[in-house]
Image 1 (cartoon, rainbow, N blue to C red):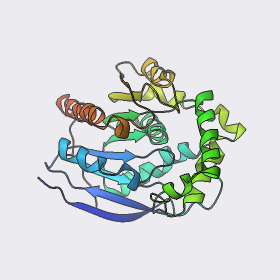
Image 2: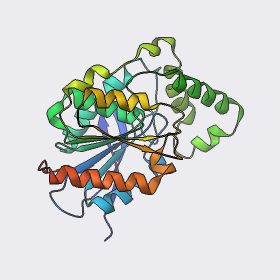
Image 3: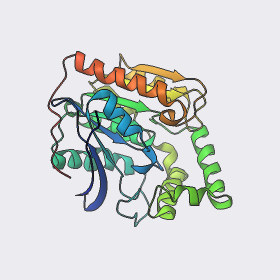
Image 4: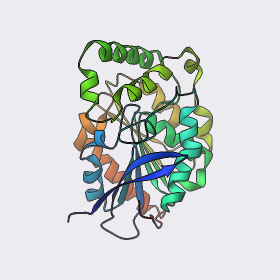
Length: 272
């Protein structure tokens, strides 16, 4: 069965954000909200949202954060607390404006960190977390890889390749790269949000992730009992690309398990 898709935009926190809504195949299913990585956007997810919607029968909302994709151009340097602002201010306003209640949050990398912040700040507002390559603190490996990305952006065709996914690629790249390499960012840590989380969590991590080690997901598991960790071999930072079938299979199982546990609700959404 094909599902209807609707591209749109919404103004949140004074910024225009692009959105993609995929209608649920079955009414009453949870809504999955997808939060992209640090250099991500709606376009960079490619067909993964459609495949997820088809196999879960859920509605799926995807959006590009401020400074990403076709959303409002980043106009200033990002502060150290930019992900806190996304999780505590932007995401709640977005969900409220679109009428989405108790979603399953699917976050990748920075998007996973934002999902953790939201779930820790508003523990009653989310029914499940799918965390792909999350960060809860800063590792040397992460900084080294981001430094390598800076060199690649300056010396290779990375800028033109990223330009397929972002309307303002220079602002997007440097907004991400500059803050992660800011010395003040080394103290960034969101482990304090974890103990308040009350929903089921599955963490999906590539064994060859160049941006984070297993210490990230183990820290989440230690703070939130019952957290499941899925380690994928032959997989780097983007499991939904490097091991798409295994990643999708586990995500679909998790969504079904959340429903089976009796936490189903109305994933209601306003038009975007």
